[in-house]
Image: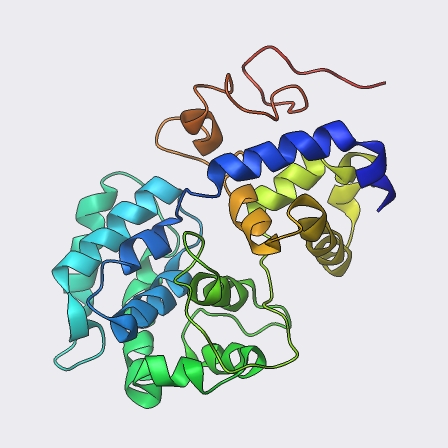
Length: 275
């Protein structure tokens, strides 16, 4: 890719950013790892992946962890299932005054995930016996997992299940010629638009399919050994944290961020505008 060759300094800085955040787990994987066995871990990844949207990473982790603690183990899929009011009570206690558009969808996603587990379980066997394409198809049965052609939540679910630790659970599915699909997260989109080639390509006006092709073509350029690590690391770029952007919270307000010289949101006073 021409942009990569002409911007070796930006690429190198981005690779440094990815190394920093490569070991930072997203909240779905972080909480789900605490389940008792692979079946439960897979189930909680499915539930969390369908639910995680329109909320900050720290706030979601609090809500997701509280539900995990309130309904441990097989309570996610075995009867009696928790009532809608009980599920919402747990979430609202953690949210406080934080507004969350997906809150009312929580019970439906919880029950739908439970139905999926009862239908396809044991999930460890379901995973091993199906290819990436078949798993992606099956995930459409879960409420809010998406119905469109790309279905980013389903794609991110597969990353969390199949990518090696710390990105995912490192589980295996049936072999096939299909590569593991990678998500184009909002963090990756912001990196493309603010730091990467999007600045010169009128990225905001591109159609969704073009944005997706561009993003997925960049991951191997940024991390040739493990493109999934690039997808994972960039999701934290300019993402809301507890009191500031997550990347600022992890890099001492941009001081230790390799991207500071190129990021228009940097607070380290190193940003350089290229003319």
